[in-house]
Length: 478
Image (cartoon, rainbow, N blue to C red):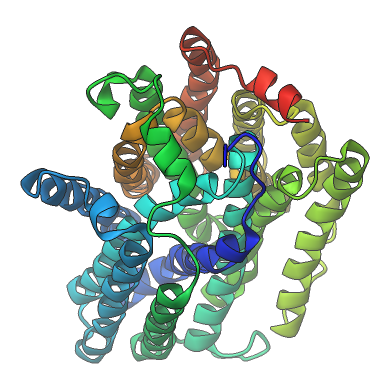
């Protein structure tokens, strides 16, 4: 069946997005581990960002290993062992990484903690290489970016819950007066997570997800994919830099926020988790909003869902924090900021390049406001960066692999490699903070968004030269 007329295969899509949840849970939990490790191991702000470096550089190492194996075996590894088997293998590798938390906690070893995070992310690298193009392939190409946005929304359900659970494991309930942090307490959540990885690996093996989706088979015969390598496509090369700086600004904004709130605003570490949760929930809010077109072609229904979806996601955030006994009075005003997101989403009209441009500009504005203000106003501004990062990954990914045809898996691997930006940009901002101030260090994020705005403008012309026009695809799809 042609991908232009196919319907989204929800029976295959739903078990797939479970792995998206895991990625978010672990990635956001790192933002709680960073201040805990900084105090427990007496680290500088720059040194504490090695948590992000270890986690995100593993994606690059994993992609390099994938390419080496594919080269030595003279064939694409994922195409050889199948999409389903590749996902299961990635989950098993991640499960092995969680086991390292047990001896690391007992030995109070920071390097061993980093090794555990590195191994978990190594498995995630293989999972991401498979899952992102697979999410796009399980339905019509016109709603591929929206489907990936929806998967990202599930990812951010994990990012919303992760910091709260890890914070609870370390400090106890929010009403507790305990401010002491126990490294040993991180063992349990990560061992439970490892068991969950293995259970889902078995479930995926039993699922109806194909070893090779029909859309991928169709793409391999795409006449547009006549070039010898994925690296021959400028949309991919520029998109790789885009993924690097996008993951960089997304991660560094959150990972440096605890230090800002502690040092500049006097917050205790145990009270920061709800704000980290709000940051990652902001990505969920934005992604639920951007995903409405994956559910229906009816324009009137889409208008209603664009207002309903973000506030439903915001309600999930409030409900989870209420359950954890957190004070919600700081967060109600955020409902007004969400209106900016809704307006931006409507202005994008489903075009990934236009959405990338608009949201990147808003990200710049949010960071500049945060840097120009103090107190809770600056916290809301920095937190709202999550809203404007929310749909950038699917936009960049969709634009970068468009027209690659048989080189799609290879291109996906190159993009996953660039997730290392989450580590390097965080490290850069951490060192800038040590030299100047944590407040001023957010200029690093401004520069990242500036490149993304440039990519949005540049890639539109590149794709049109190759006969790919998303405005025509979207209007034709409706």
